[in-house]
Image (cartoon, rainbow, N blue to C red):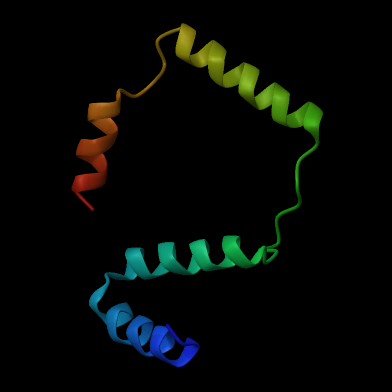
Length: 76
């Protein structure tokens, strides 16, 4: 598939998406291109701290079930 065909298809589908979906697609494209969005990368130490904090929240019951997440996403 050529670049022109891909661009034409993207341009055709983009207006069919909601505003939230368009923003999501834009963020995915930026991620694929590794475009800086004003956010700095976190350190390995900070990453590990965030993971540990998340595990503590889950262990204390402060989490969302998979089904609840699916229900929330389906309401978008």
